[in-house]
Length: 305
Ligand SMILES: NC(=O)c1ccc[n+]([C@@H]2O[C@H](COP(=O)([O-])OP(=O)(O)OC[C@H]3O[C@@H](n4cnc5c(N)ncnc54)[C@H](OP(=O)(O)O)[C@@H]3O)[C@@H](O)[C@H]2O)c1
Image (cartoon, rainbow, N blue to C red; front, top):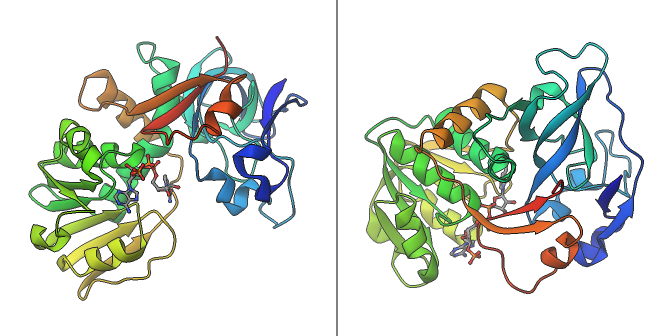
């Protein structure tokens, strides 16, 4: 099968090659999926799991890509809940070969059925961004109606999902980003917008929940704005700042079939819009990833025409 392969972390996206690789086999509780579309996150090549397995052993050359939509082609021993020919979408294991390939072997529990009226491009754009927003707001952030959310990077792939889900849940959403992000953040439902390069973040006042996708100084300053009993939820590694009287959670998103189904339902009925910035093909993906133009929104690679 055709797949994008990385061999050397120092090489970054410039070290990616389109190569011929053996098709994967389904292990216990796995399915093999013919990948139709794969979502791409530019930071993937910095994740340790791209380079090592769960025992810490070097696993290069590895196939990156962890969001996918496609069709189940075979079942592993003991696999239930999905069937051959079913359309699915979900998250591939961080430590295994991923979805920038014609086929991927993946645990069935990491996938949910993709409704017939959702395009594979849309399906591949949702799992990481949608689940990260869902888990950060509702599981880790314990968001309640009437609370305020400071949604950093509100025009980004995760930030647009955070904004829409928080607003739907009855929260007041203050989006942040660069000046050029204002219109997009407001269009995705932010009630207010803070230009982090020009406006005074602290003018927003106290908030119940900070959803941090940036870290560093922005995280430090945001922590000081959290109300007593509020939460700082971060998806960019160990938190360095703590609110005076609040909770801190940093987490890595997990696959969840029920939550994927909720997210798909919201896209079907128009409550949630995905944020796709760029689409490309498997043949052109390496060139797209190495483009000097900074991607805005999710990059989706169409793998089966
Ligand atoms: N822990 C997890 O489970 C998890 C899951 C998903 C993503 N992540 C991580 O979360 C981060 C965001 O992911 P994403 O997919 O949403 O990325 P993205 O689409 O690039 O969105 C990030 C947004 O934040 C903006 N931004 C970043 N730094 C900024 C700054 N200093 N000032 C103003 N705006 C700034 C970006 O603007 P520009 O494009 O102009 O910089 C962009 O609009 C990445 O580091 C990703 O690896 C973690």
